[in-house]
Amino acid sequence: GDSVTQMEGPVTLSEEAFLTINCTYTATGYPSLFWYVQYPGEGLQLLLKATKADDKGSNKGFEATYRKETTSFHLEKGSVQVSDSAVYFCALGYTGRRALTFGSGTRLQVQP
Amino acid sequence: SQTIHQWPATLVQPVGSPLSLECTVEGTSNPNLYWYRQAAGRGLQLLFYSVGIGQISSEVPQNLSASRPQDRQFILSSKKLLLSDSGFYLCAWTITGGTDTQYFGPGTRLTVL
Image 1 (tube, chains in turn red, orange):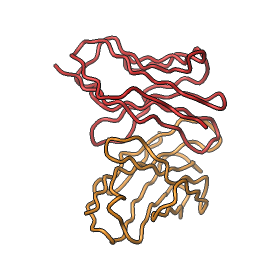
Image 2 (image 1 turned 30 degrees about the vertical axis):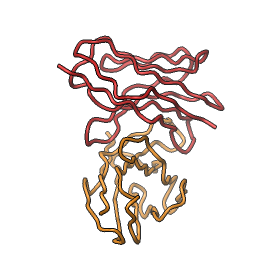
Image 3 (image 1 turned 180 degrees about the vertical axis):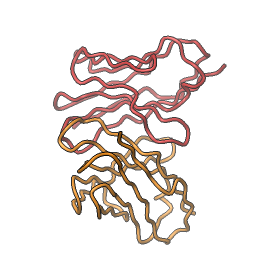
């Protein structure tokens, strides 16, 4: 079956540091890949997505590239801010399928 | 534009009491609807999904149930809550047969004492 594996958290960085959150997946087909962000006490918000190999999703300074050869979708940002502190979820899904498959989430803490 | 609402935002209930959580979607028709649970510090577990009125599929056997009485309304219920039902409950929607992207509501934090 499908699965998503994320790096263990929390990830603690200083403001303006470079961020990488690793995500790898196993899939039976050709899924779309997603990053969602959850701020404290809130629901999940779609951060970015990529629908096929070599696509790059980007939003709010975050980027992730769909790497089929390494089955990865690592999240990166060049300079994090305190306001980026949240839990980040990697997920995969298929059009018309019932639900997304989520990773366990990675908590990011950015210190001033 | 589409919006999704959940209420209540927080709920504290005693063990053995009933539960009713509501989710509504605005700005779209015939969405697929989903209930997820997020236990403290953990990922998301799909509980139920629905592709139409009265059509509910359960992913995990438990003492929870779901109903869809109207096209854009999705209700999560229990007759008797357990301590293990505590968690953050999230409703989500997606366009039927279209994009795979799911959009989430703000969530309900349930504490069972």
